[in-house]
Length: 152
Image 1 (cartoon, rainbow, N blue to C red):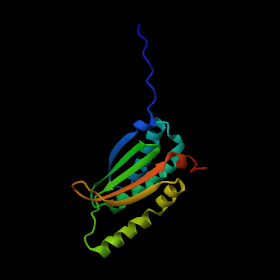
Image 2: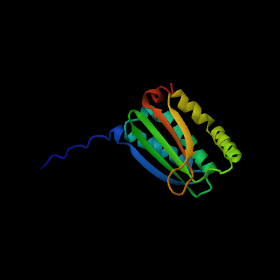
Image 3: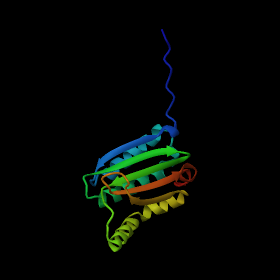
Image 4: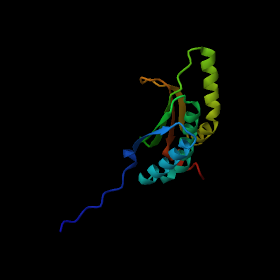
């Protein structure tokens, strides 16, 4: 009888997930739960506190701002950092003052995210989606070395 090899656990470098969620009040909680599950599976429990907070903040902001029915979440781990991207359907305003006011509202909504990412030594931002359909792309990069110490 052949011996079946036990598959190796997934490597963090293989982490690449995308979710499309409804733009509803429950979606940030779903995004946080999915992030917890994914990070556990890939051996990244040590970044979980910071990552779950970041995903929740980005998802809440996306659901708040989007005029569309869905938001898109992307989780990737590359070069020692977790990369979180959220896309929503809120287009860039053509009038400069309106665009500046909208950007200020979005930055204010992401104050907690800014603090978490800063505490981890990461980076974040938002801007216009380059793909067809438009909207806004928000992103955060959490270096593992910085995120490990976030909860302590």
